[in-house]
Length: 159
Image (cartoon, rainbow, N blue to C red; front, side, top):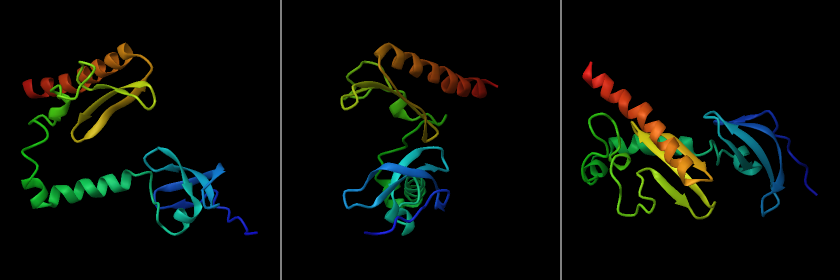
């Protein structure tokens, strides 16, 4: 029988260990509830924490990938043009794609959770990424985010 190594209140990369989780890994390792510097809560295998395998909730990887992509000339050349307009608004947030099934830009249905998702990307990051139980609520959230972020840009441009 192995001893449990208590990781409570320790920091590993961007993760701060809050407490022991009620589940163990399939290999028997202890799992821990952690909060990332970005605010997201996740459960992580203790071995991964102690050996530096898991350092964040995934936000660190996304930041590194984004920075690497911006410096990679081959990647930029094969992008097929800019992904956002001159105001920093992603084209995917402005135009309804071919795969859109709801009829509303930025609103989709997640069949796994059986919930509607409202999203808006602005200046390369999600400013809205929220799930709701109803389509109308998702549309309302999306419209409010458009008002907040898109009209803000229009007002700045007119000044």
